[in-house]
Image (cartoon, rainbow, N blue to C red; front, side):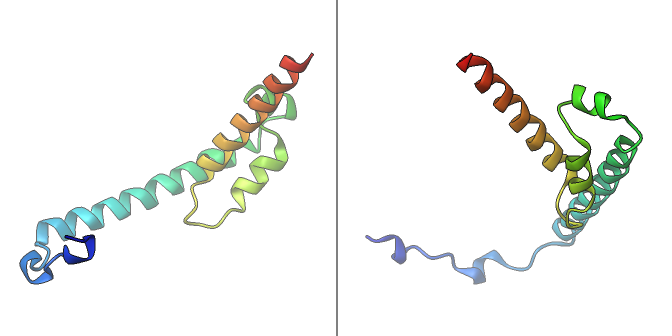
Length: 97
């Protein structure tokens, strides 16, 4: 039997219930709220000086990039990745010395 022989019969799935629709809507609203809260928190990073940002593994340019990222992209994820990249680069250089 091939995998193409296995298909979901959508007539059995039925309509989503009101509870599942409400749960889905609540998840979307919570996601938007979390992104707005993260953007607000990242906005406060602009008040820190360059040495404080560097202690967190960030530079001012990365904070600006996170703030100008598209609305539905999580800016916190961008800063986390930038900080990890900076740490990995630092440790790679330390191993070579």
